[in-house]
Length: 304
Ligand code: SF4
Picture 1 (cartoon, rainbow, N blue to C red):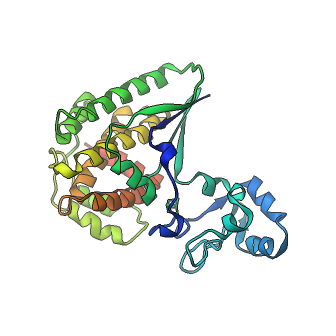
Picture 2: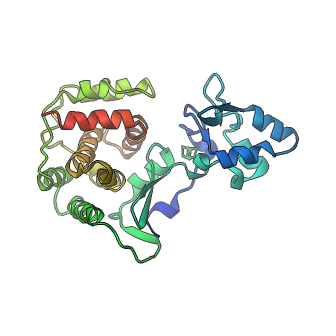
Picture 3: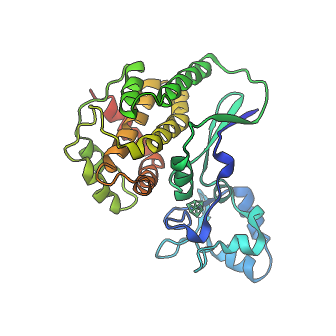
């Protein structure tokens, strides 16, 4: 099986106790059945504490979060007691994977780093060179016609996005033109406000969308031309393969452009890299990790 990844993938490092938005706080952490079984046999006082911190339900096991939504393994120094006591190799699948994501083709797997992680968002948006995609494991692959079509279109759109002879505003419009999907003129502030919410602070952030017509080219400052290009390429790499499930290549490409325009709008008043990284982290957490929100945005795109 061929394994493909963006070239920055291997440079990712979790910043653990320096992370301001730890994935060990506020997210339900499911434990896969094999790891759950392994945890039952961890001996001693730590094994007892570990098992007491797990809730078993008919749907599966997960860590029982504290009242302030901390994972019971997260200590006051911001480190994971499970890693420091019995080692990283004993993490459950979700913790070992996070923030990585995978997309599966018939004879290829694509991986990437999810931007809900601030370290991943910083790594991606700080990269200066156009991102390339590399094989981490080589293999002959026989892909279906649909897969070939999708990969060809995505490569074409990524090439447009990485054409730095044009301002990014124009490149985004070119992507929409290639996919024949002009963004509809809608009240995007209302649409985003009506979505399922993870962090109430998101309301204040998206207030900046109020009165903005995202169907028009969005002004992007010089400082954010490259970071937003990296964001756009990340979005296409991550989300276009969903079209293999629903056949909606146009809609998924338009969703990626919409997301870049929203992020550009959220950075208009404060066009610094630092602010852009934080806004991208929030966007990813609020939107990309909620299938309900993703579906609602695709529906809105197709509503006209
Ligand atoms: S969000 Fe990222 S940097 Fe923060 S603790 Fe999780 S993996 Fe580490």
